[in-house]
Length: 68
Image (cartoon, helix red, strand yellow):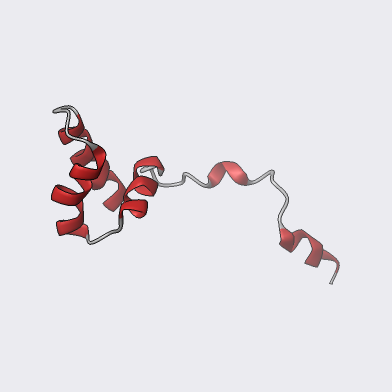
């Protein structure tokens, strides 16, 4: 829910032409207390549940433990 809310706030003020850093400083940090790097990570993160479901075919380090 936080990802969706941060993206909503960002979209609202980005349309007005406010720079990203200013959006973070004025509207995101006072409410959520996250650093600027986390803010950018949240903007790039998918907001829908189940976003990691597409990684089933990738190898895992735990595949090595199947023989034990």
